[in-house]
Length: 561
Image (tube, rainbow, N blue to C red; front, side, top):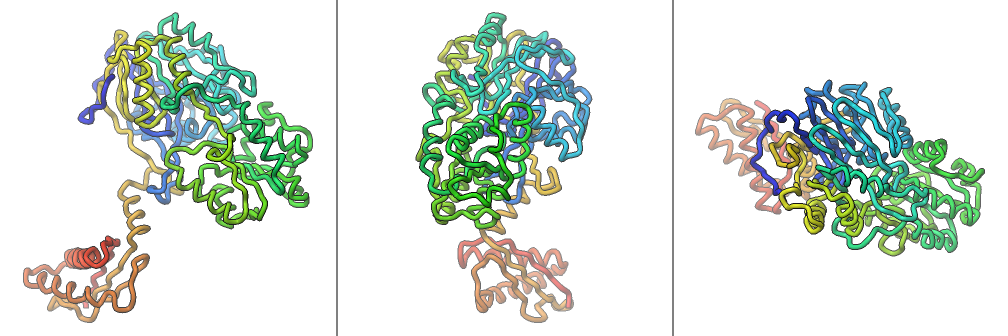
Protein backbone atom coordinates (compact mmCIF):
# COMPACT_ATOMS: atom_id res chain seq x y z
CA UNK A 1 0.00 0.00 0.00
CA UNK A 2 1.46 3.35 -1.05
CA UNK A 3 2.22 5.55 1.97
CA UNK A 4 2.12 9.32 2.29
CA UNK A 5 5.16 11.38 1.26
CA UNK A 6 5.22 14.72 3.12
CA UNK A 7 8.33 15.86 1.22
CA UNK A 8 6.61 15.77 -2.19
CA UNK A 9 7.07 18.70 -4.56
CA UNK A 10 5.09 20.07 -7.49
CA UNK A 11 4.44 17.19 -9.91
CA UNK A 12 6.20 17.22 -13.29
CA UNK A 13 4.18 17.54 -16.49
CA UNK A 14 1.98 14.52 -17.09
CA UNK A 15 3.64 12.05 -19.52
CA UNK A 16 1.88 11.48 -22.86
CA UNK A 17 -0.79 8.83 -22.59
CA UNK A 18 -1.04 9.12 -18.80
CA UNK A 19 -3.94 10.00 -16.53
CA UNK A 20 -3.44 12.17 -13.45
CA UNK A 21 -5.89 12.14 -10.53
CA UNK A 22 -5.74 14.90 -7.91
CA UNK A 23 -8.21 15.07 -5.04
CA UNK A 24 -8.49 18.68 -3.89
CA UNK A 25 -10.76 17.64 -1.03
CA UNK A 26 -12.44 14.62 0.53
CA UNK A 27 -9.32 12.70 1.59
CA UNK A 28 -8.69 12.63 5.33
CA UNK A 29 -12.01 14.40 5.93
CA UNK A 30 -15.77 13.89 5.52
CA UNK A 31 -16.77 16.60 3.05
CA UNK A 32 -15.23 19.02 0.52
CA UNK A 33 -15.18 16.27 -2.09
CA UNK A 34 -13.48 17.32 -5.33
CA UNK A 35 -11.42 15.20 -7.71
CA UNK A 36 -9.63 16.49 -10.82
CA UNK A 37 -8.74 14.14 -13.69
CA UNK A 38 -6.13 15.29 -16.21
CA UNK A 39 -5.57 13.61 -19.57
CA UNK A 40 -4.37 14.77 -22.99
CA UNK A 41 -4.14 18.39 -21.85
CA UNK A 42 -7.74 18.55 -20.58
CA UNK A 43 -9.29 18.47 -17.10
CA UNK A 44 -12.45 16.76 -15.86
CA UNK A 45 -13.76 17.56 -12.38
CA UNK A 46 -15.92 15.16 -10.35
CA UNK A 47 -17.87 16.96 -7.59
CA UNK A 48 -17.06 20.24 -5.84
CA UNK A 49 -18.30 20.08 -2.27
CA UNK A 50 -18.00 22.04 0.94
CA UNK A 51 -16.94 21.08 4.44
CA UNK A 52 -18.84 22.48 7.40
CA UNK A 53 -16.74 24.17 10.10
CA UNK A 54 -15.99 22.66 13.49
CA UNK A 55 -15.89 24.42 16.84
CA UNK A 56 -12.21 25.37 16.40
CA UNK A 57 -13.08 27.36 13.25
CA UNK A 58 -15.20 30.23 14.65
CA UNK A 59 -16.93 32.62 12.28
CA UNK A 60 -16.50 30.38 9.23
CA UNK A 61 -19.61 29.62 7.15
CA UNK A 62 -18.26 26.81 4.97
CA UNK A 63 -14.87 25.51 3.83
CA UNK A 64 -14.04 25.15 0.12
CA UNK A 65 -11.40 23.20 -1.77
CA UNK A 66 -8.41 25.27 -2.90
CA UNK A 67 -8.73 25.99 -6.64
CA UNK A 68 -5.15 27.31 -6.93
CA UNK A 69 -3.84 24.24 -8.77
CA UNK A 70 -6.37 24.60 -11.60
CA UNK A 71 -7.01 28.35 -11.57
CA UNK A 72 -4.71 29.09 -14.52
CA UNK A 73 -6.13 26.09 -16.43
CA UNK A 74 -9.85 26.76 -16.15
CA UNK A 75 -10.09 26.95 -19.95
CA UNK A 76 -8.92 23.30 -20.05
CA UNK A 77 -11.84 22.11 -17.88
CA UNK A 78 -14.25 20.22 -20.15
CA UNK A 79 -16.96 19.46 -17.56
CA UNK A 80 -17.91 19.15 -13.89
CA UNK A 81 -19.58 15.82 -13.12
CA UNK A 82 -21.85 15.86 -10.06
CA UNK A 83 -22.48 12.40 -8.61
CA UNK A 84 -25.39 13.48 -6.37
CA UNK A 85 -26.98 16.48 -4.70
CA UNK A 86 -25.53 16.55 -1.19
CA UNK A 87 -23.78 19.75 -0.07
CA UNK A 88 -20.46 17.98 0.46
CA UNK A 89 -20.48 17.25 -3.29
CA UNK A 90 -22.17 20.31 -4.89
CA UNK A 91 -21.82 23.14 -2.36
CA UNK A 92 -18.60 24.52 -3.85
CA UNK A 93 -19.82 24.66 -7.47
CA UNK A 94 -20.96 28.33 -7.36
CA UNK A 95 -17.52 29.45 -6.21
CA UNK A 96 -15.72 27.85 -9.17
CA UNK A 97 -18.37 29.01 -11.66
CA UNK A 98 -17.75 32.57 -10.45
CA UNK A 99 -14.36 32.21 -12.12
CA UNK A 100 -15.66 30.54 -15.29
CA UNK A 101 -19.44 30.35 -15.58
CA UNK A 102 -19.75 28.28 -18.78
CA UNK A 103 -18.19 25.02 -17.55
CA UNK A 104 -20.83 22.35 -18.31
CA UNK A 105 -22.42 20.77 -15.22
CA UNK A 106 -23.22 17.09 -15.80
CA UNK A 107 -25.59 15.26 -13.47
CA UNK A 108 -28.96 13.63 -12.92
CA UNK A 109 -32.27 15.51 -12.98
CA UNK A 110 -32.59 15.99 -9.20
CA UNK A 111 -28.91 16.84 -8.72
CA UNK A 112 -29.03 19.53 -11.41
CA UNK A 113 -32.29 20.90 -9.99
CA UNK A 114 -30.68 21.30 -6.55
CA UNK A 115 -27.57 23.00 -7.93
CA UNK A 116 -29.61 25.20 -10.28
CA UNK A 117 -31.62 26.55 -7.34
CA UNK A 118 -28.38 27.23 -5.46
CA UNK A 119 -26.82 29.00 -8.46
CA UNK A 120 -29.83 31.30 -8.82
CA UNK A 121 -28.97 32.70 -5.39
CA UNK A 122 -25.48 33.46 -6.75
CA UNK A 123 -27.00 34.91 -9.96
CA UNK A 124 -25.25 32.36 -12.16
CA UNK A 125 -26.97 30.74 -15.15
CA UNK A 126 -25.20 27.43 -15.67
CA UNK A 127 -24.69 25.26 -18.73
CA UNK A 128 -26.20 21.90 -17.72
CA UNK A 129 -26.15 18.44 -19.29
CA UNK A 130 -28.72 16.07 -17.78
CA UNK A 131 -27.80 12.39 -17.72
CA UNK A 132 -29.25 9.24 -16.18
CA UNK A 133 -28.04 5.72 -15.57
CA UNK A 134 -26.96 3.95 -18.75
CA UNK A 135 -26.10 7.17 -20.57
CA UNK A 136 -22.75 7.60 -22.30
CA UNK A 137 -21.37 11.00 -23.22
CA UNK A 138 -17.95 12.33 -24.26
CA UNK A 139 -16.25 15.48 -23.04
CA UNK A 140 -12.91 16.08 -24.73
CA UNK A 141 -10.71 12.99 -24.25
CA UNK A 142 -12.97 11.62 -21.48
CA UNK A 143 -15.66 9.08 -22.31
CA UNK A 144 -18.20 9.02 -19.48
CA UNK A 145 -20.68 6.28 -18.62
CA UNK A 146 -23.14 6.65 -15.75
CA UNK A 147 -24.42 3.89 -13.47
CA UNK A 148 -27.20 3.96 -10.89
CA UNK A 149 -26.09 3.76 -7.27
CA UNK A 150 -28.21 3.75 -4.16
CA UNK A 151 -27.53 6.46 -1.55
CA UNK A 152 -29.45 8.53 0.99
CA UNK A 153 -30.61 10.89 -1.76
CA UNK A 154 -32.36 9.91 -5.01
CA UNK A 155 -30.71 9.97 -8.42
CA UNK A 156 -27.13 9.28 -7.26
CA UNK A 157 -24.71 8.10 -9.95
CA UNK A 158 -21.37 6.37 -10.23
CA UNK A 159 -19.25 7.39 -13.21
CA UNK A 160 -16.95 5.31 -15.39
CA UNK A 161 -14.28 7.41 -17.10
CA UNK A 162 -12.68 5.96 -20.24
CA UNK A 163 -9.41 7.42 -21.50
CA UNK A 164 -6.48 6.23 -23.59
CA UNK A 165 -4.67 5.69 -20.25
CA UNK A 166 -7.27 3.25 -18.97
CA UNK A 167 -10.70 2.84 -17.42
CA UNK A 168 -11.54 4.52 -14.10
CA UNK A 169 -14.64 3.75 -12.02
CA UNK A 170 -15.66 6.32 -9.39
CA UNK A 171 -18.46 5.07 -7.12
CA UNK A 172 -19.44 8.45 -5.71
CA UNK A 173 -21.26 7.93 -2.40
CA UNK A 174 -23.08 4.61 -2.51
CA UNK A 175 -24.48 1.63 -0.66
CA UNK A 176 -26.17 -1.59 -1.76
CA UNK A 177 -29.66 -1.33 -0.24
CA UNK A 178 -31.56 -4.25 -1.78
CA UNK A 179 -34.96 -2.81 -0.80
CA UNK A 180 -34.64 0.93 -1.49
CA UNK A 181 -37.73 3.10 -1.15
CA UNK A 182 -37.55 4.17 -4.80
CA UNK A 183 -36.79 0.60 -6.05
CA UNK A 184 -33.60 1.92 -7.70
CA UNK A 185 -30.77 -0.41 -6.70
CA UNK A 186 -27.03 -0.05 -7.23
CA UNK A 187 -26.17 -1.36 -10.71
CA UNK A 188 -23.97 -4.29 -9.73
CA UNK A 189 -24.45 -5.84 -13.18
CA UNK A 190 -22.90 -2.68 -14.61
CA UNK A 191 -20.05 -2.86 -12.10
CA UNK A 192 -19.42 -6.48 -13.12
CA UNK A 193 -19.52 -5.60 -16.83
CA UNK A 194 -16.91 -2.88 -16.28
CA UNK A 195 -14.86 -5.38 -14.31
CA UNK A 196 -14.91 -7.70 -17.32
CA UNK A 197 -13.74 -4.80 -19.49
CA UNK A 198 -10.91 -4.16 -17.02
CA UNK A 199 -10.99 -1.38 -14.42
CA UNK A 200 -7.53 0.19 -14.16
CA UNK A 201 -8.36 2.46 -11.21
CA UNK A 202 -11.25 2.10 -8.75
CA UNK A 203 -12.12 5.11 -6.58
CA UNK A 204 -14.30 3.85 -3.73
CA UNK A 205 -16.38 5.45 -0.98
CA UNK A 206 -14.58 4.80 2.34
CA UNK A 207 -16.97 6.31 4.90
CA UNK A 208 -18.11 2.99 6.40
CA UNK A 209 -14.96 0.96 5.72
CA UNK A 210 -14.67 0.21 9.45
CA UNK A 211 -18.31 -0.91 9.87
CA UNK A 212 -18.78 -4.69 9.61
CA UNK A 213 -21.52 -6.37 7.60
CA UNK A 214 -24.00 -4.67 5.30
CA UNK A 215 -25.65 -1.28 5.76
CA UNK A 216 -29.24 -1.54 7.01
CA UNK A 217 -32.00 -0.94 4.49
CA UNK A 218 -33.79 2.41 4.63
CA UNK A 219 -37.11 0.54 4.91
CA UNK A 220 -36.12 -0.92 8.28
CA UNK A 221 -36.59 2.49 9.90
CA UNK A 222 -40.36 2.40 9.40
CA UNK A 223 -41.22 0.82 12.81
CA UNK A 224 -39.20 3.38 14.81
CA UNK A 225 -40.55 6.36 12.87
CA UNK A 226 -44.09 4.96 13.05
CA UNK A 227 -43.75 4.59 16.84
CA UNK A 228 -42.79 8.26 17.17
CA UNK A 229 -45.91 9.39 15.34
CA UNK A 230 -48.15 6.88 17.13
CA UNK A 231 -47.01 7.72 20.67
CA UNK A 232 -46.13 11.45 20.55
CA UNK A 233 -48.65 13.31 22.74
CA UNK A 234 -48.07 16.74 21.20
CA UNK A 235 -46.15 18.12 18.23
CA UNK A 236 -43.62 16.06 16.28
CA UNK A 237 -40.60 18.10 15.11
CA UNK A 238 -38.33 16.24 12.67
CA UNK A 239 -34.84 17.45 11.88
CA UNK A 240 -33.03 16.13 8.80
CA UNK A 241 -30.66 17.12 6.05
CA UNK A 242 -32.46 19.39 3.61
CA UNK A 243 -31.61 16.96 0.80
CA UNK A 244 -32.59 13.68 2.50
CA UNK A 245 -35.62 13.02 0.32
CA UNK A 246 -36.00 9.32 1.24
CA UNK A 247 -36.11 9.98 4.98
CA UNK A 248 -38.54 12.86 4.62
CA UNK A 249 -40.76 10.66 2.44
CA UNK A 250 -41.04 8.23 5.36
CA UNK A 251 -41.88 11.10 7.71
CA UNK A 252 -44.60 12.35 5.35
CA UNK A 253 -46.06 8.86 5.03
CA UNK A 254 -46.31 8.43 8.81
CA UNK A 255 -47.67 11.95 9.35
CA UNK A 256 -50.40 11.22 6.80
CA UNK A 257 -51.18 7.85 8.36
CA UNK A 258 -51.56 9.39 11.83
CA UNK A 259 -53.60 12.42 10.88
CA UNK A 260 -50.94 15.10 11.19
CA UNK A 261 -50.40 18.07 8.92
CA UNK A 262 -46.82 18.99 7.93
CA UNK A 263 -44.98 22.26 7.44
CA UNK A 264 -41.40 22.62 6.22
CA UNK A 265 -39.19 25.03 8.20
CA UNK A 266 -35.93 26.53 6.96
CA UNK A 267 -35.13 28.06 3.58
CA UNK A 268 -33.11 25.14 2.21
CA UNK A 269 -35.68 22.59 3.41
CA UNK A 270 -38.59 24.45 1.81
CA UNK A 271 -36.63 24.90 -1.43
CA UNK A 272 -35.34 21.34 -1.78
CA UNK A 273 -38.58 19.60 -0.84
CA UNK A 274 -40.45 21.82 -3.28
CA UNK A 275 -38.04 20.78 -6.04
CA UNK A 276 -38.27 17.07 -5.10
CA UNK A 277 -42.07 17.23 -5.08
CA UNK A 278 -42.29 19.07 -8.39
CA UNK A 279 -39.97 16.55 -10.08
CA UNK A 280 -41.83 13.54 -8.68
CA UNK A 281 -39.14 12.34 -6.26
CA UNK A 282 -41.28 13.17 -3.22
CA UNK A 283 -44.85 11.87 -3.04
CA UNK A 284 -46.95 14.36 -1.07
CA UNK A 285 -50.64 13.48 -0.52
CA UNK A 286 -53.05 16.33 -1.26
CA UNK A 287 -53.52 18.68 1.66
CA UNK A 288 -50.77 17.13 3.79
CA UNK A 289 -48.23 19.97 3.58
CA UNK A 290 -49.62 23.30 4.74
CA UNK A 291 -48.39 26.78 5.57
CA UNK A 292 -47.08 27.48 9.07
CA UNK A 293 -49.97 29.85 9.74
CA UNK A 294 -52.42 27.00 9.13
CA UNK A 295 -50.42 24.66 11.33
CA UNK A 296 -50.42 27.09 14.26
CA UNK A 297 -54.23 26.87 14.50
CA UNK A 298 -54.29 23.06 14.74
CA UNK A 299 -54.23 21.00 17.96
CA UNK A 300 -50.68 20.01 18.93
CA UNK A 301 -51.33 16.30 18.29
CA UNK A 302 -52.12 17.06 14.64
CA UNK A 303 -48.87 18.93 13.95
CA UNK A 304 -45.58 17.85 12.34
CA UNK A 305 -42.73 20.24 11.55
CA UNK A 306 -39.81 19.23 9.32
CA UNK A 307 -36.73 21.43 9.74
CA UNK A 308 -32.98 21.67 9.23
CA UNK A 309 -30.29 21.52 11.90
CA UNK A 310 -29.65 17.82 12.54
CA UNK A 311 -25.89 18.51 12.85
CA UNK A 312 -26.22 21.20 15.50
CA UNK A 313 -25.45 24.01 13.05
CA UNK A 314 -25.76 27.24 15.06
CA UNK A 315 -27.93 29.13 12.56
CA UNK A 316 -30.18 26.21 11.55
CA UNK A 317 -33.79 26.03 12.73
CA UNK A 318 -33.38 23.29 15.34
CA UNK A 319 -30.42 24.96 17.09
CA UNK A 320 -32.33 28.22 17.22
CA UNK A 321 -35.34 26.43 18.72
CA UNK A 322 -33.05 24.89 21.34
CA UNK A 323 -31.63 28.34 22.14
CA UNK A 324 -35.08 29.96 22.37
CA UNK A 325 -34.15 32.08 19.34
CA UNK A 326 -36.89 30.89 16.96
CA UNK A 327 -40.55 31.68 16.45
CA UNK A 328 -41.27 27.98 17.14
CA UNK A 329 -41.03 27.45 20.92
CA UNK A 330 -40.30 23.98 22.25
CA UNK A 331 -42.79 23.09 25.00
CA UNK A 332 -43.33 20.24 27.45
CA UNK A 333 -44.48 17.09 25.64
CA UNK A 334 -43.11 17.93 22.17
CA UNK A 335 -41.23 15.10 20.45
CA UNK A 336 -38.09 15.94 18.45
CA UNK A 337 -36.88 13.32 15.97
CA UNK A 338 -33.27 13.67 14.78
CA UNK A 339 -33.38 11.63 11.58
CA UNK A 340 -29.73 11.95 10.51
CA UNK A 341 -26.30 10.64 11.37
CA UNK A 342 -23.68 12.30 13.55
CA UNK A 343 -21.04 13.60 11.16
CA UNK A 344 -17.57 13.24 12.77
CA UNK A 345 -16.61 16.49 14.45
CA UNK A 346 -20.21 17.59 15.06
CA UNK A 347 -20.94 15.36 18.06
CA UNK A 348 -20.50 18.04 20.74
CA UNK A 349 -22.73 20.52 18.92
CA UNK A 350 -25.44 17.89 18.39
CA UNK A 351 -25.47 16.73 22.01
CA UNK A 352 -25.59 20.33 23.19
CA UNK A 353 -28.74 20.85 21.09
CA UNK A 354 -30.23 17.58 22.43
CA UNK A 355 -29.59 18.72 26.01
CA UNK A 356 -31.20 22.11 25.46
CA UNK A 357 -34.25 20.59 23.76
CA UNK A 358 -34.63 18.19 26.67
CA UNK A 359 -34.33 21.10 29.09
CA UNK A 360 -37.45 22.69 27.56
CA UNK A 361 -39.41 19.47 28.01
CA UNK A 362 -38.99 17.76 24.64
CA UNK A 363 -38.60 14.01 24.21
CA UNK A 364 -35.64 13.74 21.83
CA UNK A 365 -35.49 10.60 19.68
CA UNK A 366 -32.15 10.10 17.95
CA UNK A 367 -29.76 7.49 16.58
CA UNK A 368 -28.45 6.80 20.09
CA UNK A 369 -31.79 5.73 21.55
CA UNK A 370 -33.85 4.51 18.59
CA UNK A 371 -33.42 3.05 15.13
CA UNK A 372 -34.18 6.26 13.28
CA UNK A 373 -31.15 6.48 10.99
CA UNK A 374 -29.29 4.26 8.57
CA UNK A 375 -26.14 5.27 6.76
CA UNK A 376 -26.03 6.14 3.08
CA UNK A 377 -22.64 4.48 2.68
CA UNK A 378 -21.45 0.94 1.95
CA UNK A 379 -20.16 -1.08 4.90
CA UNK A 380 -17.37 -3.69 4.81
CA UNK A 381 -19.53 -6.45 3.30
CA UNK A 382 -20.62 -4.25 0.40
CA UNK A 383 -17.13 -2.89 -0.28
CA UNK A 384 -15.62 -6.39 -0.36
CA UNK A 385 -18.47 -7.53 -2.61
CA UNK A 386 -17.66 -4.71 -5.04
CA UNK A 387 -13.92 -5.44 -5.03
CA UNK A 388 -14.58 -9.08 -5.85
CA UNK A 389 -17.05 -8.08 -8.55
CA UNK A 390 -14.92 -5.40 -10.23
CA UNK A 391 -11.47 -6.94 -9.60
CA UNK A 392 -9.68 -3.63 -10.22
CA UNK A 393 -5.97 -3.42 -11.00
CA UNK A 394 -5.51 -0.37 -8.78
CA UNK A 395 -7.56 1.17 -5.97
CA UNK A 396 -7.69 4.70 -4.54
CA UNK A 397 -9.96 4.98 -1.49
CA UNK A 398 -11.79 8.33 -1.33
CA UNK A 399 -14.35 10.11 0.85
CA UNK A 400 -13.26 9.48 4.41
CA UNK A 401 -11.01 10.29 7.30
CA UNK A 402 -7.59 8.63 7.53
CA UNK A 403 -8.87 5.63 9.44
CA UNK A 404 -11.55 5.05 6.80
CA UNK A 405 -9.12 5.33 3.89
CA UNK A 406 -6.64 2.91 5.49
CA UNK A 407 -9.38 0.41 6.37
CA UNK A 408 -10.73 0.55 2.81
CA UNK A 409 -7.25 0.02 1.36
CA UNK A 410 -6.76 -3.02 3.62
CA UNK A 411 -10.06 -4.48 2.36
CA UNK A 412 -8.89 -4.10 -1.24
CA UNK A 413 -5.64 -5.94 -0.47
CA UNK A 414 -7.52 -8.75 1.29
CA UNK A 415 -9.60 -9.30 -1.87
CA UNK A 416 -6.46 -9.72 -4.00
CA UNK A 417 -5.47 -6.24 -5.14
CA UNK A 418 -1.67 -6.01 -5.08
CA UNK A 419 -0.48 -3.78 -2.18
CA UNK A 420 1.48 -1.60 -4.63
CA UNK A 421 -1.77 -1.02 -6.50
CA UNK A 422 -3.53 0.49 -3.46
CA UNK A 423 -2.71 4.18 -3.15
CA UNK A 424 -3.59 6.05 0.04
CA UNK A 425 -3.38 9.68 -1.02
CA UNK A 426 -4.11 12.91 0.73
CA UNK A 427 -5.61 16.13 -0.58
CA UNK A 428 -3.34 17.60 -3.24
CA UNK A 429 -1.44 14.41 -4.09
CA UNK A 430 -1.00 13.79 -7.83
CA UNK A 431 -1.69 10.11 -8.54
CA UNK A 432 -0.59 9.12 -12.04
CA UNK A 433 -1.93 6.12 -13.94
CA UNK A 434 0.59 5.13 -16.58
CA UNK A 435 0.87 1.78 -18.36
CA UNK A 436 -1.65 0.26 -15.95
CA UNK A 437 0.27 1.25 -12.81
CA UNK A 438 -0.31 4.01 -10.28
CA UNK A 439 2.24 6.15 -8.49
CA UNK A 440 2.27 9.38 -6.51
CA UNK A 441 4.20 11.94 -8.58
CA UNK A 442 3.95 15.11 -6.52
CA UNK A 443 1.72 17.43 -4.57
CA UNK A 444 -0.18 20.65 -5.30
CA UNK A 445 -1.70 23.19 -2.85
CA UNK A 446 -4.91 21.80 -1.34
CA UNK A 447 -5.50 23.69 1.89
CA UNK A 448 -8.74 24.98 3.37
CA UNK A 449 -10.37 28.03 1.79
CA UNK A 450 -12.73 29.69 4.27
CA UNK A 451 -15.97 31.40 3.30
CA UNK A 452 -16.40 34.06 5.96
CA UNK A 453 -19.45 36.23 5.36
CA UNK A 454 -18.90 37.97 2.04
CA UNK A 455 -15.23 37.06 1.78
CA UNK A 456 -13.87 33.90 0.16
CA UNK A 457 -10.36 32.97 1.20
CA UNK A 458 -9.89 36.19 3.17
CA UNK A 459 -9.86 34.45 6.54
CA UNK A 460 -6.65 32.52 7.19
CA UNK A 461 -5.49 30.07 9.85
CA UNK A 462 -3.88 33.07 11.58
CA UNK A 463 -7.26 34.82 11.76
CA UNK A 464 -8.89 31.71 13.21
CA UNK A 465 -6.09 31.45 15.76
CA UNK A 466 -6.78 35.04 16.81
CA UNK A 467 -10.51 34.30 17.09
CA UNK A 468 -9.88 31.21 19.19
CA UNK A 469 -7.51 33.23 21.34
CA UNK A 470 -10.10 35.96 21.84
CA UNK A 471 -12.77 33.40 22.70
CA UNK A 472 -10.66 31.38 25.11
CA UNK A 473 -8.16 33.83 26.59
CA UNK A 474 -9.72 37.30 26.24
CA UNK A 475 -8.13 40.57 25.21
CA UNK A 476 -6.29 43.28 27.15
CA UNK A 477 -5.75 46.73 25.64
CA UNK A 478 -2.99 48.83 27.23
CA UNK A 479 -2.96 52.58 26.54
CA UNK A 480 0.38 54.07 27.60
CA UNK A 481 1.17 57.80 27.38
CA UNK A 482 4.97 58.04 27.14
CA UNK A 483 7.06 61.17 27.64
CA UNK A 484 8.92 61.68 24.38
CA UNK A 485 11.96 63.16 26.13
CA UNK A 486 12.48 60.64 28.93
CA UNK A 487 10.85 57.58 27.39
CA UNK A 488 9.01 57.00 30.68
CA UNK A 489 5.30 56.92 31.50
CA UNK A 490 3.79 60.39 31.70
CA UNK A 491 0.88 58.97 33.73
CA UNK A 492 -0.32 55.50 34.80
CA UNK A 493 -1.43 53.38 31.82
CA UNK A 494 -5.09 52.54 31.20
CA UNK A 495 -6.16 48.89 30.90
CA UNK A 496 -9.27 47.77 29.03
CA UNK A 497 -9.99 44.06 29.33
CA UNK A 498 -12.66 41.79 27.84
CA UNK A 499 -12.98 38.08 28.52
CA UNK A 500 -10.09 38.26 30.99
CA UNK A 501 -10.95 37.85 34.68
CA UNK A 502 -9.96 41.03 36.50
CA UNK A 503 -10.99 43.63 39.08
CA UNK A 504 -9.95 47.23 39.80
CA UNK A 505 -6.61 46.22 41.32
CA UNK A 506 -5.67 43.37 38.99
CA UNK A 507 -3.39 45.42 36.73
CA UNK A 508 -1.64 47.34 39.53
CA UNK A 509 1.09 44.70 39.50
CA UNK A 510 1.70 45.21 35.79
CA UNK A 511 2.60 48.91 35.96
CA UNK A 512 6.09 48.37 37.52
CA UNK A 513 6.83 45.78 34.83
CA UNK A 514 5.92 48.24 32.08
CA UNK A 515 8.02 50.97 33.75
CA UNK A 516 10.97 48.57 33.97
CA UNK A 517 10.64 47.64 30.27
CA UNK A 518 10.45 51.32 29.24
CA UNK A 519 13.45 52.22 31.41
CA UNK A 520 15.53 49.50 29.79
CA UNK A 521 14.42 50.70 26.35
CA UNK A 522 15.45 54.27 27.20
CA UNK A 523 18.91 53.08 28.31
CA UNK A 524 19.38 51.29 25.01
CA UNK A 525 18.10 54.22 22.95
CA UNK A 526 14.93 52.45 21.81
CA UNK A 527 12.18 55.02 21.35
CA UNK A 528 10.02 54.12 18.36
CA UNK A 529 6.31 53.67 19.13
CA UNK A 530 6.15 50.29 17.43
CA UNK A 531 9.16 48.98 19.38
CA UNK A 532 7.76 50.28 22.67
CA UNK A 533 4.40 48.66 21.95
CA UNK A 534 6.13 45.33 21.42
CA UNK A 535 7.99 45.67 24.73
CA UNK A 536 4.78 46.53 26.60
CA UNK A 537 2.92 43.63 24.97
CA UNK A 538 5.70 41.23 26.00
CA UNK A 539 5.73 42.49 29.59
CA UNK A 540 1.94 42.26 29.97
CA UNK A 541 1.82 38.86 28.25
CA UNK A 542 4.49 37.37 30.53
CA UNK A 543 2.69 38.73 33.61
CA UNK A 544 -0.68 37.30 32.46
CA UNK A 545 0.84 33.88 31.89
CA UNK A 546 2.57 33.86 35.31
CA UNK A 547 -0.52 35.14 37.09
CA UNK A 548 -3.20 32.89 35.68
CA UNK A 549 -1.73 30.65 32.98
CA UNK A 550 -3.60 32.78 30.46
CA UNK A 551 -2.43 34.18 27.13
CA UNK A 552 -4.85 36.99 26.26
CA UNK A 553 -4.45 38.98 23.09
CA UNK A 554 -2.48 42.08 24.08
CA UNK A 555 -3.17 45.29 22.15
CA UNK A 556 -0.65 47.98 23.21
CA UNK A 557 -1.18 51.60 22.20
CA UNK A 558 1.67 54.07 22.80
CA UNK A 559 0.88 57.80 22.67
CA UNK A 560 3.63 60.42 22.78
CA UNK A 561 3.07 62.98 25.51
